[in-house]
Length: 445
Ligand SMILES: *[C@@H]1O[C@H](CO)[C@@H](O)[C@H](O)[C@H]1NC(C)=O
Ligand SMILES: *[C@@H]1O[C@H](CO)[C@@H](O)[C@H](O)[C@H]1NC(C)=O
Ligand SMILES: *[C@@H]1O[C@H](CO)[C@@H](O)[C@H](O)[C@H]1NC(C)=O
Ligand SMILES: *[C@@H]1O[C@H](CO)[C@@H](O)[C@H](O)[C@H]1NC(C)=O
Image (cartoon, rainbow, N blue to C red; front, side):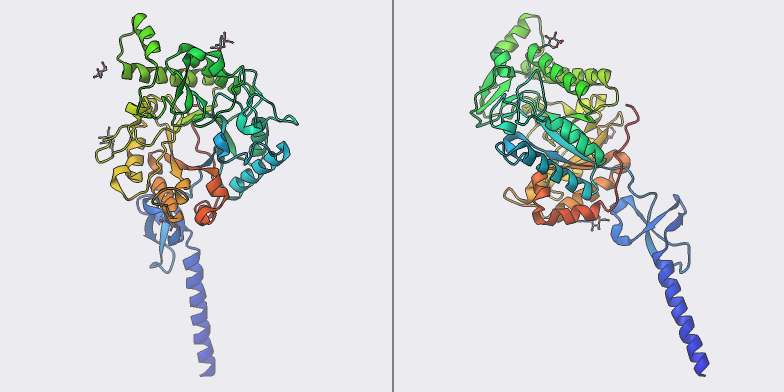
């Protein structure tokens, strides 16, 4: 009797352990349609990427989540904005050593969060965060436009070396036309593009903006890009959403350039001509950088709405009409290696719905170029309706649900929101990025 009870107890214990072990170790699953895959905990199932199934092993009724493979390749990046000292350096008057320490701190955080790229702004306004013979040192680095850091150092060389040690890519972010930021009043150095080409440097909306229609301005920007690709081991060149400036309600003062174009026989009307000016730069940039270094990538992160009303139900600023940015064409024709539309809106409201826009963008990538969504981490801390950190997690999940259609990662704007751990975002990212992932491969390069 006693023995019997012990035996029963033992059996019970054994079967309990068995079930537990089987349940937890249900790590492969032979899916009728997809074959063998990995079983993962149900809490780790991001939407439709994973299929729910039953373990083959006993007990057969333990449900698990099935993944063809864990996410091995995913682009996970932050924008490091230097203009106005948004993200880095925190101040233009601290020492180079302090600036370097801040940069290391950022890279260590990126590494710790299992992210794999930084988009580093090296030319916010015709200036340089690297040693250049073409352009002056940035005001935001040293406090005086055109004055080198002392002791001398090269932030671009530094970040490339420190990032690559940590398996982090560096995408060099350039602004092609902005010559001085809105509100800035510093004296321009004599070799600045606005001084080289004063005829094409316009005060506009408290900025100084170079004329995208000027062939000299285009050639100069191309020379700057060529120089960077030649001398620095950057993984990519990146341009954001600024083409023709956001309107201040007045006409951009390029009438003389347009008239000169017409006098040379140009037939396009002004809007089409402006777009063609930007297209010319993008195409030449793409072609020239790949001649110099075929493996360097080219990415653009345009305003998230190509045209208001496209697709149906979307409304907002039309970057095609207002900024003369035909980003859809670049994606369709493969003039970029990746497109990172700034989808700076939440999932639910329909007018700028994140999933609707992302679904539209990936659908335009007819040449198979990657799409990385830009996510507004800053909206957790700014604006009328502030995001919860959960919104960011949901957006990553939505992105992952479209990964078989080229939505291959996320870029956060901006670094300081991550560094300041706004609303505990670092915990959310650590949860999303439990394992390291490789940068998605571009087999056309
Ligand atoms: C996103 O997916 C992760 C991993 O599957 C899950 O833990 C999390 O709850 C999801 N987050 C949201 C906000 O949907
Ligand atoms: C661009 O570089 C080429 C080759 O060095 C030079 O001939 C040309 O003048 C430069 N263009 C501008 C606008 O600086
Ligand atoms: C400009 O030219 C394009 C192409 O020829 C045409 O479709 C468009 O309607 C024209 N726009 C204006 C405002 O004339
Ligand atoms: C995606 O592209 C296909 C084919 O061009 C088109 O039929 C479909 O409507 C598009 N979907 C969206 C959401 O744009």
